[in-house]
Length: 168
Image (cartoon, rainbow, N blue to C red; front, side):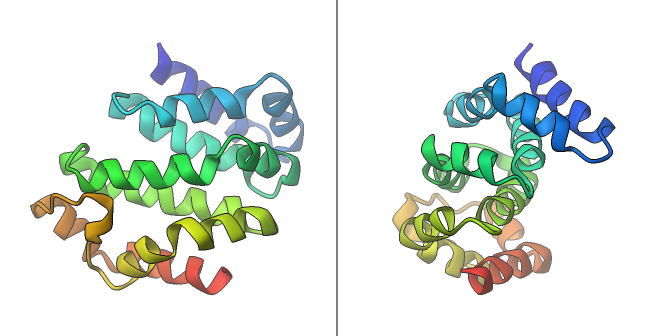
């Protein structure tokens, strides 16, 4: 049910050409909070986590009020915790998909939003630097396996992490 709900939010955003009307409705109805609660759940199934990450990204893209709600609900902290869970092996073969969704969500959360940028700089600088260099930080309780190693060697993920660092 949670996966369907997360996917439905994403589909609703995709069907709206300008996205602004749908973004406002999602914010008004508590969609940002709902998506963050799915993402924050450490036992959440990947079938709902990944759509929640992508839907949240779409919900806050170029929408300052939604980015502010994301900030108010500790979105940066929650998203960095997802990286930490990934580093402990929670996502196995899907770690590359999770990291891709997380990094693009971080881009959207800081673009044009100074508070989110500052928060990410304070809380996530080290992990972003490590991802940009293709290595795994030990400070997040890493249990490095072959899936994490392979994901961190992805040029695409390293490039997105470098882009985030430049944005900060």
